[in-house]
Image (tube, rainbow, N blue to C red; front, side, top):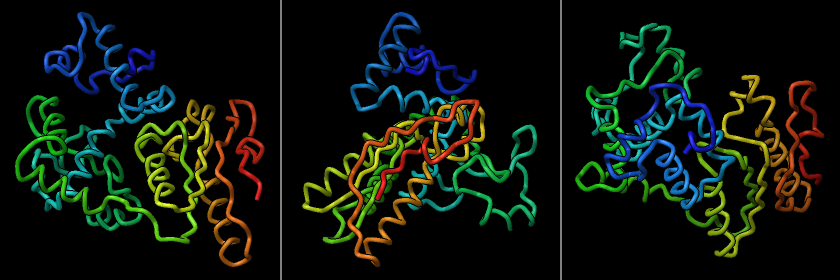
Length: 276
């Protein structure tokens, strides 16, 4: 799909189009046709071009596999070293080989690590064998059979969000360009569910904002996207004012931010945060 959009992908990241075609996941006689088929399938399921373009970042950093392996472990409550698909975490050397972590590294994990590799010197170590098979194993934990899949699905069901309690002030801010957890699969259905239940939810959809504010340090990202955290702080301020100063809750908004480009500093004018 990213190939169809003309988005560059790092070499040797993910299975080849021919591998996906052989597994019956995409159709087409050429890579261009298979890329178009993948693109159409993702679009039909709710992916937008904006989310797909930023999703290239997650693809190049192999975040999809890391997130899938990590969340499967959490939802299934698998102990360390018991991942059903054979994934594990380890500190790695400059060549990417597993090694023992030092005491100083382990002490820093609580403050420096996000919990999802790669980060803080820790990487995801994939099982030996064909990489595509490990990806299919991860997918089967959602749509397959067996005790491991049942554990993962049970964990997802147990943590699924329900309607908030009546009167709870809620502001949701989400980047329209989020390519890791797109709006269409997360905040939008939650807001719809909550409103159908009669709850009041403020929904800020921010154009030109994606998932990782930390990645805005990369010049190409900082030029194209605005940070999302200022909207989170603004939302917290509005909720505080509502609770303690009797101010009204903010209105929902589709916020038209303006990326700073490569020749100016980011200002509040760029962010276009809704006025109280």
